[in-house]
Length: 256
Length: 256
Image (cartoon, rainbow over all chains, first blue to last red; front, side, top):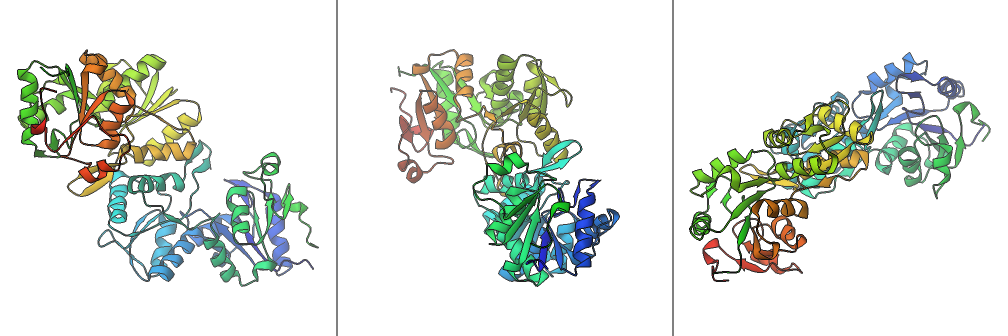
């Protein structure tokens, strides 16, 4: 029996690559199930609901239910409610973020705005950005689901939420509170949901800058798998190394 | 007879405030006309054509023709043609920018993009930003008409082109070439149009960070007028002072 009693697991690049299956990922999660080890998928993707994420995982032969999914939208909504209460929120974002904010009982509005929250929004326009800028200048809290500057797609690297958020940041001079990886906010919340101790939980991901840094910032052990963003060569240049590094999840030694 | 043989003059905050007339501005330009001193309005507003700008000035009783107007769109289009030739340009912007690019014989397209240029665009959307990001990552030159982060309106400070440009800058990691004030590019071009010598030409404006810094960067004499953005108190904090500072253009001493 290994030392880790719980697993926080990244999605894109770790469980799949866009629409492409990663077979070792399916085997890895099936092992977790078999060993009765709790796990939670932790994603910076704010656009999808937990249900949609679970459906995608199941379609890729990865055991998952809604309860196995923790999105940065959920973390952001929870953070807002805990920090500010049931305030008036102006949202720029997609269904996943809207769903999470509503579930926390927050009031979505463009009037008397007390908090502005930005997530990826492929229907973004000037008016939305203007309302956000005016509210932030007027003293509203300013939050962003994640700082990812680019999203990998078949067309190439598209603008990520971090770059959209920069419009309001640059225009107002107010720095947003980011919630997603590599911030520890999302990890701390995910640990509370998972219910395992921090020192007995492993953070698993492919992206050094987000997944591994999130684990490091949250003082957790980390496992990088080179099936996505960060190459072996890129990792070698990082000063702080993850606890473990493997080429595919099949290499994970369950005895550790 | 004063030492200045030509005047470069800012618009918003100097010649008018939004839709509000500044009477001293009208008297100032009429003096220029009377004294037969050449002048050119130099603006970071990329959205309007010179004709539209001249019409607005005339409606405010300020003598102006199309030939008196030099926009950052004109400067940007000229810069692109001189630097890269008649390349394929992907534009995010409004009519003033489109008009200027077409007048320089540049080919506006979203195919085989050789240069991306951004100006204020109140019809901006995710797809436009995506095309710009993909092209810049693919090696296209990246230009921006101006770095103004906010635009004063009746509703408050709205997002300016500098903040929209930051999406592509932050997402790609490529720093754009800015053309408008405070860069010297636009001033150098304006001087060439005006035809007077640099040391005999005065830069007049209300905004220390853009107008006055543009003059300083272009090693010109500068005159700040406190009818717009920069207050007397704010100016006092600046290390490099403008050559002259006055409260209204009526205070300008034509004997200088």
